[in-house]
Every structure is written in C-alpha cells, then in structure tokens.
Length: 232
Image (cartoon, rainbow, N blue to C red; front, side, top):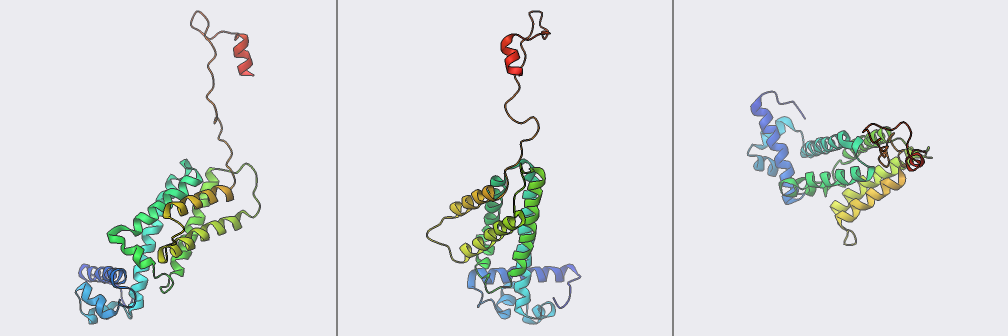
C-alpha cells in the first residue's frame, strides 16, 4: 500500500476496496477486475483508490492476504483440537473447514482461488505449508510413534504439498473423475499411511476387571482361581 489508513473512515474505504476487488474477481473474472471497476463497485473515485494502492495488483495481493488470514485461523483452530484427534480426523475436519470457508458469501473466495495461477498465490501456499507442517509436528508430539520412521520430513513435505496443490488444482479445474469427498478421504488415508502409528497411551486398552468381593462385602485377600488367571 502507498500509505496506511489511520482514521476510521479511511480504514473503512480501504476495506471496501479490498472487498470490492474480491467481488469483481469472483463475479466478473480476473481480467475484468480493473481499477475503475473496483472503485465503482466500492463506491469511491479512482483517485481515492490510487491514494492507497499504486496498482490493481496490490489490491489483488490484499485479497489474497485476507484469504490467507482466514485459512490460517482455521488451521490454528484445528491444531487446538489435534491432541484428541486421529490424523485421519484432523485431515478430514481441516479440509471440510477450508472448503466451507471458501464457499461463504456465494463462493466468493472459492472463485477467487480459481485464478491462483495468475495471482501471486505462492506466498499463500508457503504460509499454509509452514502452518500445516507445524500442525503435523504437533500431532507427532502428542501421538509419539511406536518406532522411528525413515525420511519423515520428506513424507510430511510430500503430504502437505500434495494436499495444497491438489486442492487449488481441483478448485480451478474440477475433475469429473473425482468428487470432493473422495479427495478428502484419499488425503486422510494418505496421512494415516505416511505418518507412523502412535503408541498406545498408558492405561489404554480393555478396561480392568474388578476382583470379586468377599461375602462380607470387602475385597478378599486371595482371589478365586478364575480371578487369579485374569490378573496374570
């Protein structure tokens, strides 16, 4: 941005310009999202637009930053729930949340993402890659592996980037051979296959059987033969 908005009115105008940019891209396509069209949609003059943004590409970048902030918040929320989830459920829930976020406001951000190849989407992908890699690290910390796995960083890299690039590819050009649910399930299975199986937590497994009580209602000092065989 050429300058930062300091007053509430200017901040509101900048917010309207970013929102108008997203709407123009989503409804009219990227080529039609010109500075004049964006300013008209936001209800401001082109001169006011150029006070804060030197070119329309800077507005595109602001839209991508807004999308990134929303997606990173989703990942952060799923990381908070990660200690109590399996890796499959984490992947499923995260991808469902991502799609739901992109589809809000009549699929506005989903339609913007379709132009990822023409937009500066690399920074978005890099931010999400770092955060998802951190998420998998959190999972492994809470669910330690039964045994070391060779090339674990490589496997995490492949999994994360496969998820990211497949999603943007599918959004920009959906395949008739795959449905969204199938893609999500495929990645959940891939995560379970690539990452090591966790160790069982202490005390996990079948519940302990109670020893029979003595006729007086107290635990007997010696268990009957059947109970002794269970305790062994």
